[in-house]
Image (tube, rainbow, N blue to C red; front, side, top):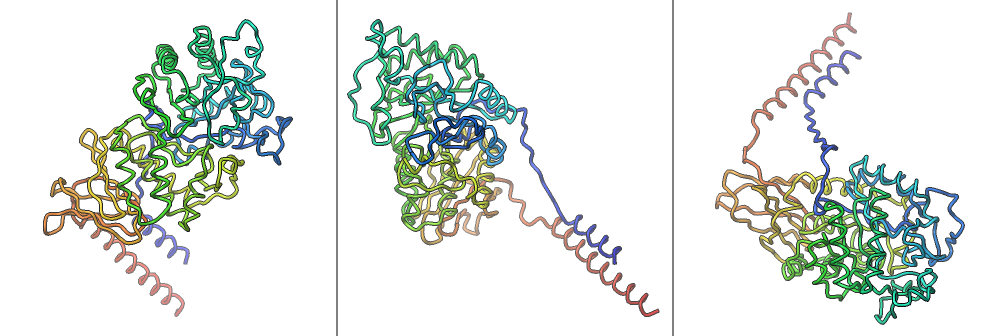
Length: 502
């Protein structure tokens, strides 16, 4: 019997064909558009150092909850597995008491002790770099805490100015701040000195400029130019505080690599939280702007959770996230995923969105999709660099194309409650479309037309490849092996029977 099992196992191994693709860990992605960013709100992510709980009050949503730098380091392997290539963390500078958000800066050259030590920060950056992951830190250039020494310094009265803008509820921290007068050359020099300090001392890879839409364009031009002169490869992202802000100057700043796009954010939430809404409307928003410097996202610490928005309409979490992630990871721009989305987490407002990440509630199927769609984005350069066009639409379904250096990738998203089909032209007859998510195969039909059809509420990513027809060699090989398998089993059975009859 052991001999029989050995032969069966050997034959099964012969029929198994495994093709493993290993990423070259020594090759670093340098352009921001090649990154997949995981957005971390430090205090609400993961508590890795239980000794840093002096100001923690888990019953108060406006107090520290215990997340720290060690907690982030502990999760790097998990984030790497999900396909993230960069982390963007909230401000780390020393803050006034209860400044868990990082916007009550008291010392631009000190690290918030609730988050850990400089050694903890160095260790986080080193561990991230060992995994070929970038580290981006949110940098506050507009505001300081009212308790910052410069606010009460009589010799620096012209360093700050009165705040006159009305802010959204999520910016309730604004009440305890003073706005920096960025037109003051001393203030500008001070902020550039602070930027130089963190760049030199920590080996981080970039800054996300907090509330860049509220900053002086002249100051930002000088500030960003200084940073790029210091390190041309240093990432500069622009955060947006007011959804309706005019971000033209941010997009026109040649030193800023990417800007948060709230127009696309709002359209994604409008379309994908319900079925039968046309995906083409999301593309139309992008086409109207045609900006290549977008940071694409579906939620963040200042909004309701995307999961909460579609759950209110009865949509399935896995189904809807597959649609959203496929768009984010294949459209023009850099995808940013807010912490906990991979689980997924829910929250109807910014306060609930800022709860500690509930890692114990993970969904293996959603995690597996994160891994697959991120691997696809990383494998095909067209998805980061290619021209982005809409090929055709049919009700709630759209097909997009990314083209780059002879590589073409087609992305089909069907947000409809029915299966839909879209006709594709311009593909050579000797090519076929092979799906990477659902193993779909599309060939030219008898009329010389390629038709992509996918079921309701699904997504697929197709690559073009030579049409080889049926692989008769492989089919013959597999058939032959199974014939041998059957014959071997019969012969062994007869041999065993003959032996028992003696």
